[in-house]
Image 1 (cartoon, rainbow, N blue to C red):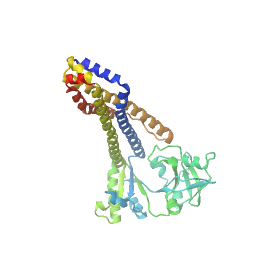
Image 2: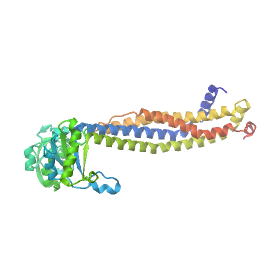
Image 3: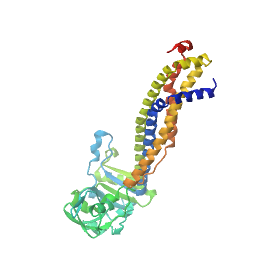
Image 4: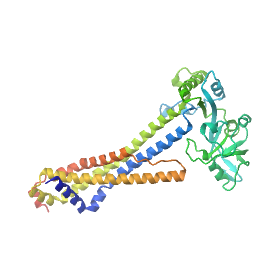
Length: 412
């Protein structure tokens, strides 16, 4: 038998049992679809988050209270109130941190905001007049928080569009007063609708002076973050080192392993997010690949049934001159064709579902979620599914090739 005849025989054999063939490749289709979706959506999430981080600016440095935990038992290390007023004063000294252009303490949390019976619980973001510059979020109407507001711990607030629309969908609240923690806050500004196109969702935020947030809303004396903007990208690394040295001296720390704070830059955040998302994507893809193995077992079972049902056909082919190698090649090819078709369908279905989910996320949540077709995962999906056909189709094919033609022809 020539290769052409072997291929033709394999295709005819599969067409004879269309329903069985379709059910056989179902596991492969599901497995490849899941892999394509996991990788595609994982890349979309990675692009979204990295874009948000990059949108903050390469000069921004965040100081976070608590050290980075070294394991599950060390998680309490992150729950410290290690950033206080004295730390802010230290960092503001130009001799300690000479390249710090701007410094802003940040206090944030969640609290109920109400207006004429309507309530909503957004993120309360306490900062200074520098919020607009550092995060590139300027009020669309009204004004930003001022230095005088911070100094006086004024009861003023700038509202995000989602907060505004929830509290008063038909009325502009600029100049009105809303209630937060029992106090009346004057609405001095309204932010433009930005969606979650930055690291923070400013649509779902109420911005107040950090002094007001500390004193009247959360009742704390520490900061959740201290944000520093270096005077240039070239000085970011030097500023990070200066910040660490200044805070260690202030806290009496001589061993860096015992730092009760962490300093993060845009580069650090990008590396951390990339590592975590890449590892998570690979893990989920491996979990999804389990269904490929299940599909392979299904292929083997169906092929064994097919070999048994076609015993007389195998005997007849051998009687007409087909060799063991011809029979082996025919049944192996049938398995590979099945899994290859399953892989192609899985790639198309996975891409379509990923694209649809990307559209839903973009339209429903306002996220700048981009659809990414994972070419490498698609090639890998075809390769792995075909390899599964070879591996799990080998035993049934060998069984068919080793049949005695005389006994096969007698099979009823």
